[in-house]
Image: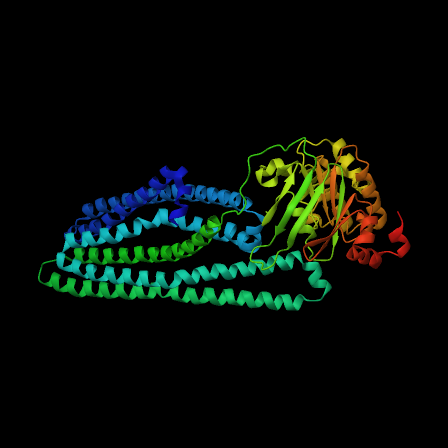
Length: 577
């Protein structure tokens, strides 16, 4: 938790005022038993009604002042904890966004979601309770002990024996439950992962009639979560019985010993009642403290998980360059580039060398898992090469600022991702101030203008989350248009026409090739027809470049390319220009 305390820096005043007013409330509470003792020993003993009424008024005043202090403390504690939670989530979200794909792949999406939501909420609740109760409960315990000694030193010994026993019980429960609460959050990660996979893959699950299997898996994980929470809950539940037993034995001892002291005239009846009240106050304070300990235990476990995320540093350091070399002969260059994913034993790409001039179209083809997407992901520096280098405009991509590099590139990923909002909102991701004319121009090139015009609301048509109210082909065409709106120097189409028919695919490629700007295009595709007319074609097999050249050259020199073409096209179509 101490590593996260910095998020209270902007709320120092609230963090001081909250506990301070709780201490004032505790002071008023500690005075109450003495007033009660005086009412009994003086007012009731002497049948002095005026004295009773006067001190009764004092009790009401103490109650009102205590309530006012409590409300003030809760207000400032809530302000501090909410501010803490907001700052923590903001910083955590920024940190996650600063991680490279490598770290995101390693940690996992579901656990990051849990840590920025459930764990952050748990820590925020912990801060709120600590500010309100952490100082109050010990103050009540210590204050009640001191007040007991002021009444009678021998009776105070009972308090001295009871309080360490109570502390021992609380500490023991905390030590046992803390690692279990951490395990609970880990199981919660699994529940989040299964839920996310089921919601995202609902169509696939239903297509294969796997609902029962998925329900069974979810039930099994949920049962594990329930059993773990039940187990730790039972341990935590022992806190109250044990504390009650100790306190009740202490009260019995006070009454028994106090009764003897009253008989010999050493104590008065009101003082014995005051001692019982102080022991009861200790019980109530320790019950609150025990609940606080449970929440602190949960909060500490959650804080540890959040700190684990903060401890993960990106393996990619941002450069400082904002521009490339305008006189560079090549727009993109791979210089003996090799890459391996985290914890992988083998390279996904090995010794790739490729030079691409501005305005050229490069086709990338190969089998599934041969590294096509990995290759193009290194251009915008989503991943860093293990060996070798990647250059854009004559400069190593490691030297660029992320924004400067990626503003040059229009990226259309394999999975068409659209965001909730209007079509216009989605089109403006690459250029916030894009005009409708620019948007329609991009839609026309992407072969999406026709179906957008058919929508009653045009660019104001609402898109559901993930574009679920559009077909696969419509989503792909909109993601291509979104990339084109920014007028990129480099356009990467990562198998982004797989849902398009051949005619639409051909129109799209023709429209891109006739763009007035000299756009360098990388086309990743499983279709030979999509890359057949490219200026250069890269053939990958098991992460190695086994062919490089034009369609006609590769038919003569690359057996792998020829096999791919013949598996998709007739011999006449393969050899046709």
